[in-house]
Amino acid sequence: MNLLAILLQAQAAGQQPAGGGWSMWIMLILIIAVMWFFMIRPQRKQQKELQKFRDGLQKGDKIVTIGGIYGIVVEIKEKTLLIEVDNNVKIKVDKNSVVKDFSEAAQQ
Image (cartoon, rainbow, N blue to C red; front, side, top):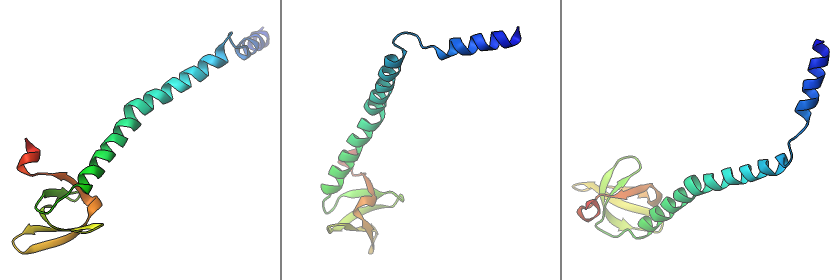
């Protein structure tokens, strides 16, 4: 009796309900669409805004780097910035390491 029950359950498990294949594909497409809408799209938008900020940097802007260094932009080159962190203390950083503006206008 046990063997018969196992064989009947295996046969029933092998059968798919009508339309089962299509509903799986629709659910997969919906999951991908939701992930794109809520995860990938906002991240791309944030990256574009950050690149726009970096391209718009000007001399005298107060900035913060990824490493947490606060400074004022003294010189701008194609890929690097020279920032002043204290009186007569200047460091050269990569433009991509700048993450935000902390000037008074940006805080309001």
